[in-house]
Length: 79
Image (cartoon, rainbow, N blue to C red):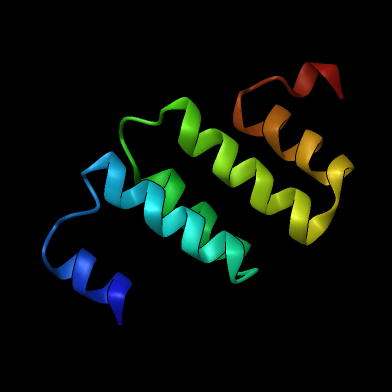
């Protein structure tokens, strides 16, 4: 319900609210939802990146975190 309220009231533009949603979804192991909120956020900061990567580490393991980070940053030439 919280995320629906945020979407209806356009708070997702705010990076602090988006960061809190990414954190909430990550802690609930709903990493796909956390990733979707992250992707929809225009101004991603270091805290948001760390929160998302931490969520991936907790839910999917460190190696998949590295792969996902490389793909999201456009560094697929390293893979």
